Length: 107
Image (tube, rainbow, N blue to C red):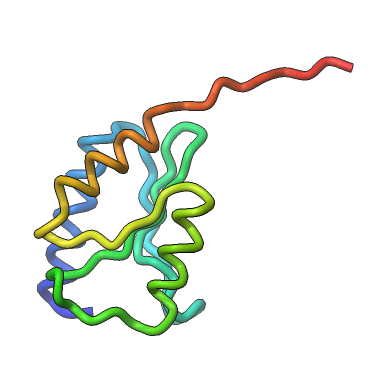
């Protein structure tokens, strides 16, 4: 990870915590699973994953596109970089703040 991406990621995490108070942001280990997305965001009963890039034209590593598509189908996932940050954060906020109503089943 470049210094520019590392600095952007640190600032981005602070913005997400302001946007989604009480969320937990977990930095993933790409050495354990090649291409796993950078950040897991847990908020209430929802989760999302983001792959942080320093710019729109930063290269994608093997499997990152696969994981963005896979996790987007399960919950929410996206590539995020300065050029699309506001759009992605708006979508992230909508996805994580609309909590599901839990239904209790009694037997």
